[in-house]
Image (cartoon, rainbow over all chains, first blue to last red; front, side):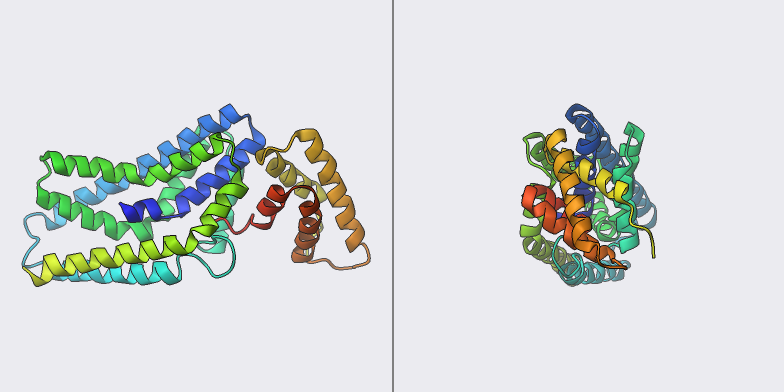
Length: 223
Length: 79
């Protein structure tokens, strides 16, 4: 959840989108459109999560160990790789918070954020931003789905965790929205993002590697 | 090589200015002055790169509003 809340692509696109919306429409309309962006990001997170849960059920249910220990090693390896990648390459070198995505796509996202006019545009942009981060979220979805499946999908704890997991990625968006509504602007938000850049990198890398270590300890070595 | 599209730059600056909370009249006035000064300092050059143009506009914007200048400077560095 910490990783999901620390990822920067959707909040970055949202900050840009809200900025352009404030520049083109009234505050009320910008605020209204922002809800559809958040809804888009939330719906795509839910769809991706539930699809992966379903696929995990089909492929791995009742077959998790000992046959699939190799699966956990593979996931742990991917998470360690993501930890290293997120520390060194999640943010590009230089000032600002340029992210890992190719510059062409970053420009396209920027243009899309600028050209949002309707609720459906805002919704689609939110969904697109959520999808672009899939490379960093997919292994986490798989790990979470497996763990929740092992807890038993009927229990309160597993359902509560699922809801919490689905809601976590949009918390930073509500936070940015609140910042804009309380009078801050893109310059203030970007300054704080730049200030927290090193910390974000560290948290991402640490969390990925910690999850990998926990998987190695509890799902492979001690089984 | 492409032509320098002043109206596009002014349009973008106006959006940024409104978004950072600068009143429309004030924004229009200092964006106009910024563009005028930028053109003046680049008038002796036959070829201007985008970097040159951004640097000059940024230098002028810094005189009027720090937030707008910051947004302009970081416009490609947010995502």
